[in-house]
Length: 273
Length: 214
Figure 1: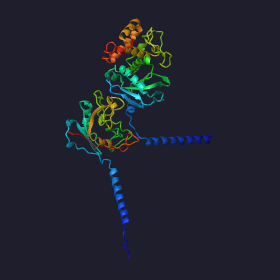
Figure 2 (figure 1 turned 90 degrees about the vertical axis):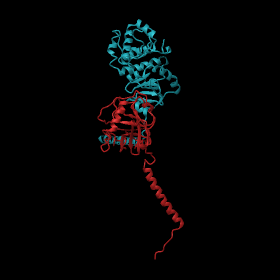
Figure 3 (figure 1 turned 180 degrees about the vertical axis):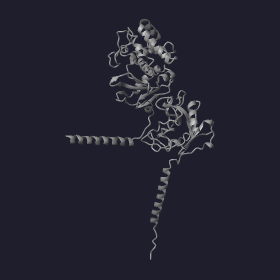
Figure 4 (figure 1 turned 120 degrees about the horizontal axis):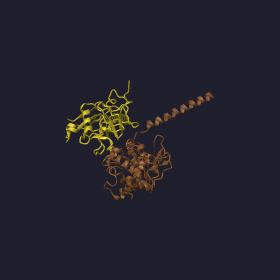
């Protein structure tokens, strides 16, 4: 029995060595192709879509699908040319509201456009990564909420870059005492993105998932609703009033020149009434 | 008595052909061996420059590379670069990272020096002068021949390492601190030793000298 095991171990070691040798030979004969995009943001299969933008955001698209992460659990598919052309103007219009200085402060530079983005099989609208200065956006995400989602994901970049500024313990205290967030955004069934008619401290069902998602939802509503609408919400809902002021105050702390809707010269077509 | 045998015409023709073949083979071998044969070597003394204070000459194995520095775009970085060049710090420093027709990188003063190359650490060495802040806010087109300062994964970690790009790299704008552009001698850089299988070079080429024009 021992010999059989020993022999099988030797065979296993030999096959491992053979595999190593094959990999090494493959590396030796494989030429190096410097891929600038991959070297910069560590996402394969990307091409430039548009890089000459006012605020110097660089838009990239997936030429073919890619997988990311240690366990390769982040998957996104290649972007269809028509989808890309259709969505680009909308994405550009929304992201162009952020100045170069603000983007530099929050560490956002690359926007990756792809389709059917998912993490561990769960579909998601975007994946922010302030370390790599990258925001991956699923251009096929629900049309109805797409603009709001863009700002929602931008907030995650802001939050990740300025963790200390957005104190979750303080935020939680804004809510009613009997309310509890879920432990994580995906371990909750509070996923609805439709805006509540009666807000009661939250803009959407998804706001109720975690504190950081609530902040992102609050921020995205501030960025997409008209100032008049925000004013009405603040008058009717004291919790949301405090949440809105919390977010606005901290964003202005990051960049005193930040333009919220209402104090910016912007087309009213940008605002959802 | 030894009888002299005269070579026939066809035998003579074969002999001449063999001699000619040997000469061609040998000369081809010599020509192919010399990678610098068709590379033009620019002599800065024969040239006129508008901003001669900002002209630097890098001498590599195939000749001179003439670079113009842009202090108006990256003042602190160019100041550091000029200081290192003036002190001959780059002499005998390896082109340790080279990708064919893409990029050449050099300037590791700690682990890239001829005679004391450290292959395990090359690319991580420092100048001893400390790091400087990235200067990436001014617009700069990273076209072929642009010279920039290398850095670690983080900004504000530029030191002595620099790179020269051998193709346009528009995404480098706002990412890496530019210091100048090659005016003449890109073909010298294209001849720097590279390896198809690795960005990091075994037995690399070295900078012979790197000097200010004035």
